[in-house]
Length: 196
Image (cartoon, rainbow, N blue to C red; front, side):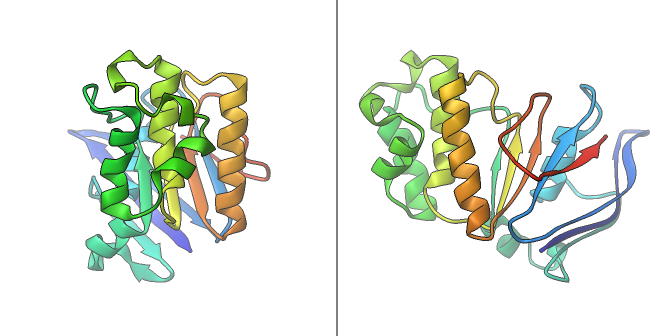
């Protein structure tokens, strides 16, 4: 499904990583670990097409993703460590924005992360964990083959991590793949690991 071949990325004159290679099959999961500043978030941005690789290639089903960046963007969901919410919009309105872009139903996505009862609240009054759950609810809107997640469990309680685990399991069962940067254990059984 996804193959990285000898990827390298530089920040100014300093290499962030080099010679990075991996493959991710349908239904696969890869955990990116390492110290702060090791390049986990940078790698996710590179995989999302937001940063160019200094060296190497990224292939999707054998085709270079650089050949069609629009198609690559359409096949993935990238969730950074920033929640990207509008504080003046309600919970439902925030999610409705993404539903217009990708399709999908708002109510089931909210329910998947336990946010149905909060749908009318403005984003500004949510706790940090509730904001994170709202950001994660975007994953439940419409199918995308590849999920790129940067510290997805930050601020989540145990019940919310379990909801995320169910969402991840369902995605993988449909043949979707997940790459997640994390410092904490994630509910991704049988995930491969890449330490940066």
